[in-house]
Length: 247
Image (cartoon, rainbow, N blue to C red; front, side, top):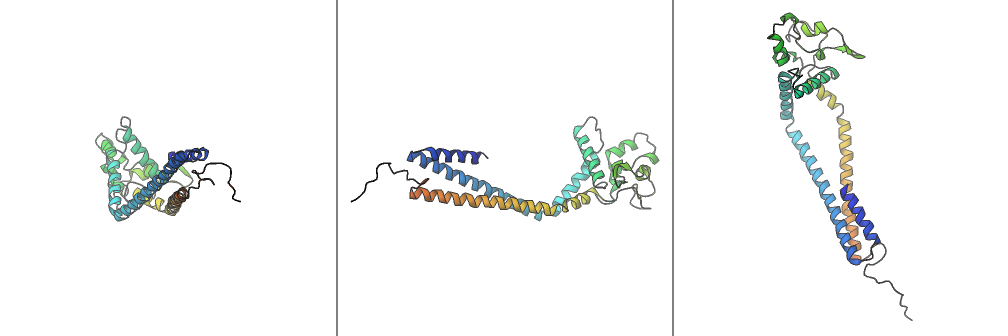
């Protein structure tokens, strides 16, 4: 934006000036601005290509890192002293919203048992809670009414069933518990937007490349006009005066 405003100002100054020296200086400034603009766009394109190549090459490793971080935040920060720790409160809210919006639970598919390793569960386990009544998963893991996200279908069975999920992955199915893990649920949600992302990226790349080509073409035209000493229909070296006619 600064380059555009500055370049426009130089063009206005050049148009009002009758001094050849000032006109030449403004031409040099404008050409420099155009090449700076080209260089910035070129760097952006190169960085975007590098980022895409790195993401493609390390796709598996990136997925593993994301899963590891998700598990770590769930085990150590979820509902752990949220009244006094701002980060833990933010992490807890993020997990609950994700599990409700994406109809998922924990990280991996059928991965509810990770909650039994969490600080949230361990606190209850070691503070004289009755084991059969301890919630094995948070209420955000429970299935909700189709048209009413606030209404949990059966919270008690969802959270406290001991003979199967969420206590273990074995046993009778728990029809009131979300089975999908949030990692795959988030990947699926993002994949549905992938064409929009590609389309936006294509348009953005076209605009950047178009700007680069325009900058080069404009710079060449200005340099050509400078060489021909024609600026705005007049030569900066020509002194106005009466035309001399030959008879």
